[in-house]
Length: 590
Image (cartoon, rainbow, N blue to C red; front, side, top):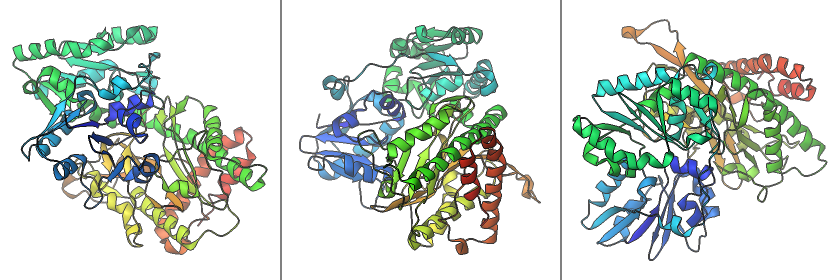
């Protein structure tokens, strides 16, 4: 083997969140959720995308590591780097459980474009052999009640079997943790910020098997699985069972379906000739929220807005009183305290980004007990946070300025352009199920482009219903994705602008794609628009009002009126006059 690559996929990202450290984090100290670490005899490199350029440059030991900024002009991918800088014969070793088979196909095609280069699956991960990694968690698995799920396990399995019949396939293998959680209406606490549990599943026309350590399931969960005729087998039996599954499918002359996110080891265990790779039908079904999930999400976001207004009211008062220095981390704990008092609260949906000044320019910055700056009232403050509620998952970013000195002209102009992009997407009307997300990504960027500004992340990602703050298959991003936007999808609307060493701006709300009535319906075409669910003022003191059109002002004022009408009565019930005053001040008409 000429090189080892420590890779990551979504499942390994969850493992990292469960304190099972990802190989590239252990070897490189890089804590981002996406990356590839390459170790050869002569050098070590880490490749990551635009969300993590600044973070990686700070976390890597630059004396020993080279950073490849994936997506930048003239910057090769890690496998292109190999082809450009090494000579054959050259073998790249990788743990087959940590890379999607669909990615393997792409990499193999690239490497084999030059004779003597190859990707090799390893039976043992060398980092696992030398690192003292903790065991997998074994926490309780509980039921997601029907009043929040909106659909029974039996209904979901029936729909999946209809898909198998349509494709004339033997079975479908479920490898993604969010998909097993959704399919079986179960949740767990194995993963920090994600109510998931380590599991696999196999669904055939005749049977359903969930591979999970059943001793940790509640009695209610056992009963639910029994009612849905779900067989339970130990988690460790999943990979050994695949050989027999492959033989059964071969005897029926049918293929086994696997998700395009399934790892290479799953495919190797079955045999490549016996599988068809598809975009997961479970992921597709999960993304389209039913009416119960949509209503639950609306209520979760309204509830979340109560905690947000309480927090920002407290934060501004605390900073202005200036009794003692307030650190970013301690402020984040206060926000969590407010959220923890809300109904149906199960925890945060990700680590809170509480960032003052230049820290806001680090897109995925997160303070800790040992690394946290004092919040400077005269610098812009960015807070990206979210919560897990039984009835929905939230993700919201707000950027505020609490200082007494006027913010700079550039800061106000950039903030206003970000706001205009946000409004452009929030008010967009598109043909239903005909427009891929990348087609409308530019809606949010155009106001920034007019100023010569840009941001290095997507504009929108999907979000789950008490599952995860990020889900697919849809995105709104410059990166191509052919999934068309459908009614029932939840997606974030989060343009931003970041100036290294100075400040970060991001305005994020969650929107639902919903039917929209139009005066005409050309050739029977139906249309959709975006319903903004997040309830928290966008603030007014960073807005350069003369840049806004009247329609943009109308949207902003209407949104703020909604925030006041929804949140003020709840704050009055709690007797929080400080939060009410803050809400009304930051919702003033523009």
